[in-house]
Length: 64
Ligand SMILES: [Zn+2]
Image (tube, rainbow, N blue to C red; front, side, top):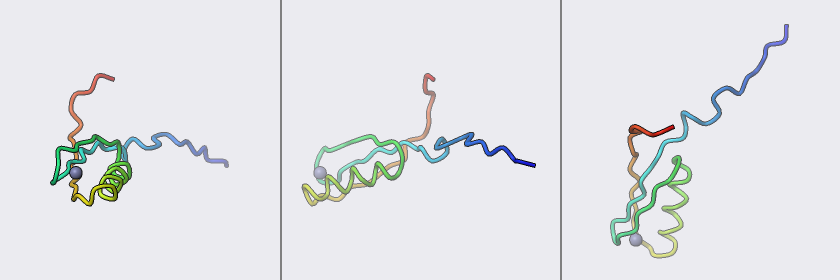
């Protein structure tokens, strides 16, 4: 009959942490998820014209 659709794990898999690092200045930001990282990078780039790289931060031991 009706299958229960559980939204069990919403965004856990997708939420990776990124370090947005600027090549041209000391700008550095952490972001939750690729979209956020892209947004931050685009923001800084628009403001400064700098080129940024987003590095994925490995999920280390985090106190839950
Ligand atoms: Zn910069």
